[in-house]
Image 1: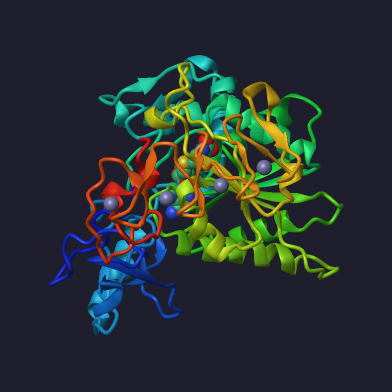
Image 2 (image 1 turned 180 degrees about the vertical axis):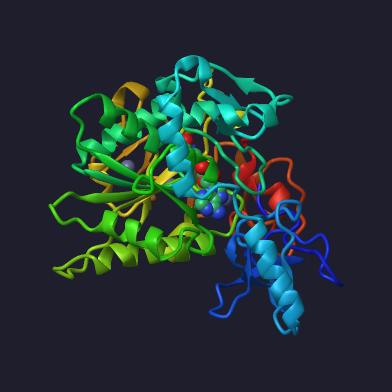
Length: 462
Ligand code: SAH
Ligand code: ZN
Ligand code: ZN
Ligand code: ZN
Ligand code: ZN
C-alpha cells in the first residue's frame, strides 16, 4: 500500500496525488532533503514535485516527511513561496506546541516514580497511552485504564501499547514471536553484540528483556518515531527519531547517544536492523540509512572500507528499488511474520505467505535459515532458499521470489511466477486473464512498465 494523499493542503495545492517517489502518470517525485527545508513538528520537510508521464510538472513543494496522510500532519509549502515573518513565528509556535506533553527526561523520572508504587497504584491510561501517577488519576477518571501494571508488563511495552496501525503513517506491524526469536538468534550466531533497532521496538524489547534476566551481553538502541516508548526506556536505550529525514528529535545529545552506540570500541560488533513502514519513500529511507552507516564509519578508527552490517526488512517486490540504492545488498528467502497483520501471518494452512524479506549486505551464505521450516542450502547459489525455490538450470539460480516454485519461460529468457503464461500479444509473461493494454506509465510498486500499481503482478498473491 503506497502513497495515498500526500501532503496536499492549503491554497491551490495539488489534490489526490498518489504514489510518491516512483515517477509515473499523475505521481509525485521525491526530490529529497533540501538544506534550507522548512520544518514541521516531524523535522525538516521533504521536497516533492508532481509528475506526469515521468516528467516533472508544476511547482515544487515541501511536505511532511513522516505523515503520508494529511490528517496526521498537513504541512505544506511551495518551494518558491514567500513566508512572512508572522507566519514563520506562528509555525515555530505550532511546532513547539505539537511536541509530546512530557520530555524524554521527564518520562524517565516518571518511570522511576512509577516503579516505586505498589502494584495497586500502578495504572496505565489506555486512551492517552500513558503510565499514570496517582496525582493524575482524577484527570483521566473517565478514560479506560489498566490496573496492577506488573514489572513484566513494563518490560513488554509493545504488548501494553496498542499498535499504531494507521497505514499511512506509523504502520506498526509487530514481529510474530517466532520471527523475532529467529532474528535475534541469527544476530547472536553472527557474533554481533550491539543492535541499532530502527523501527523495531519488538526486537529491542526482546533484547532488553533478556539482558535484564540473564547473563546476556547483547545491547540495543531503539530509534523510532513512536514517542510512547520514551516512557519505558532511558535516553541510552531509546531515541525519538524520524527515519524519513534522519531527524533526531532530541537534538545533538540524542545524535551523540547514537554515535556512541555505533562506536565499536571494545570490539563489540554492531548491526543495524530496520523494519520501516512499506508505504514508499524508499529513497528517503535509503538516504537516512546511508547517514547512519556514515555515522558508523566515522567512528571507525581504522577507516577500512567496510559497510555497517544491515538487515533491512521489507517486501520482496521492493527488491529492485533497494538494490538501486544499495548494490551490495541481497535478498534472503526468509519470510518475516507479523502478529497483527492478517495478510502477513504464517497461517497454519500455509496459504498466506508473508511477502516480507530480509535485505542484507552480509555474505548470503552466512545467513542460516531454519531447516525445520523447510529452508535448504543451495550449494550453487551459496545461500539458503525456500523449500519451493527450485534451482533453475537455465538461469543458474534459485529464482523464486515468493517461495512458490517458479517456471522458466524460454521466450522471456527468465523464470516467472507459476500462475503466469506467455502472452504473444504483450510479448511477455502475465496472468492468463490480464488485459492486453499497454500503459506508458511505470508501476509504483515494481517499477516496471505495462501496468499500474493496482494491477501489479507482484501483488497478485495478496
Ligand atoms: N516489526 C517491527 C515493527 C515494524 S512497524 C517490530 O515488531 O519491532 C514500523 C515501525 O517503524 C513502528 O515501530 C513505527 O513506530 C516506526 N516508524 C514509523 N514511521 C517512522 C518514522 N518516520 N521514523 C521512525 N520510525 C518510524
Ligand atoms: Zn540455487
Ligand atoms: Zn529460469
Ligand atoms: Zn514469457
Ligand atoms: Zn497480453
